[in-house]
Image (cartoon, rainbow, N blue to C red):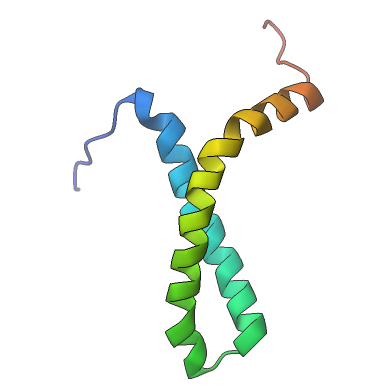
Length: 83
C-alpha cells in the first residue's frame, strides 16, 4: 500500500474547492460537449480544452463565492443541536 502524506488541515479551505471544481467542471463539460457535438471523434479532441477553460473559471469563482454560499446555507439551515 502506498503511504500518502496528508496536507495540514489549514489547507482544507483551498483543497475542497479545488477538488470540487475539478469534478464539477469535468461532469458539466462532458455533458455540454456531448450534447453539442455528440459522441464523435471531435468530442475527444474538443472536450479537454472545454474542461480546462471551464476549470480556469470555476476554481477562482468558487474561492470567491464560497464565503457567501456558507452564509446563505447558515441562513437556510438550522444549526446542529448543542451549538
